[in-house]
Length: 280
Ligand SMILES: NC(=O)C1=CN([C@@H]2O[C@H](COP(=O)(O)OP(=O)(O)OC[C@H]3O[C@@H](n4cnc5c(N)ncnc54)[C@H](OP(=O)(O)O)[C@@H]3O)[C@@H](O)[C@H]2O)C=CC1
Ligand SMILES: O=C(O)[C@@H]1CCC=N1
Image (cartoon, rainbow, N blue to C red):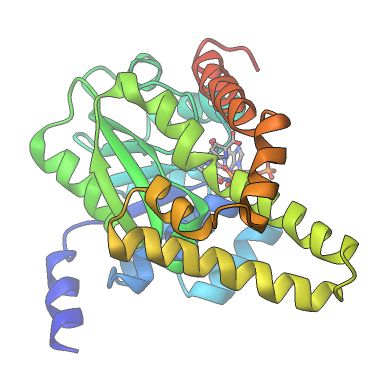
């Protein structure tokens, strides 16, 4: 309780506008509230009035248009699709408070793109979060723009710290980050879907197969995190000589699954790079 009150005092002079209340926008909003940001210091904007009503009801935050939200904020977090970014920046740029920090979570959108579309000297940060932020297990990378000072970078990191781990990286690494941790949850869910299907193929009821796969994933992820062992060592511990695991892994190698991951993640990084150049 004392800690929450202390944090609320820390945020007294900071107001956050969150523009774009979709999947990631809502994940960030819920993380900000869980980390102790007072709802009274947050205003949310989205172009769907129905969506805004639902958000206001669920989280007790103020809602408004993009320009209204931006006008009163010390930090503006933009969570719209990359394809909507230029239009939104034109809409809100002239309404920003002098010195307000703009944080974008859009894939591919560079700090140079943000700076070009905002008033001269606007501090910006490019941030790449992921959906596990919803359960406070997010992975976020933050890169500073040309006018982003240390206290701005700290604020951008602090925004995300409430819902998981945060690292600061140079911007030339952000396309790779997007391909790995940004899109990464989708690859994991894809593998989980395939393993559940395999369980059903082998005759297990779908519910049983799902329970086995989900707990196996959770257990394996916990081992990776808690033991600090290299994944090769952990994989070798499962692979008995002449046993079942090696029989399966040989099939994965024969089907070039490892190579497919490399190619897939290269494609994601390229797509991130292309999004900044307007290949929408
Ligand atoms: N989903 C993910 O896992 C991750 C997404 N990101 C990035 O986050 C951003 C948002 O993604 P996501 O949440 O999935 O997308 P969503 O489509 O779920 O959310 C975007 C929201 O912004 C709204 N919007 C668009 N333009 C405006 C505008 N001018 N003013 C106000 N609201 C607007 C959209 O409305 P409408 O529906 O009408 O278009 C929508 O509600 C993207 O840039 C993406 O690259 C980053 C990391 C992970
Ligand atoms: O698929 C996308 O473009 C977004 C960015 C990272 C995760 N989802």
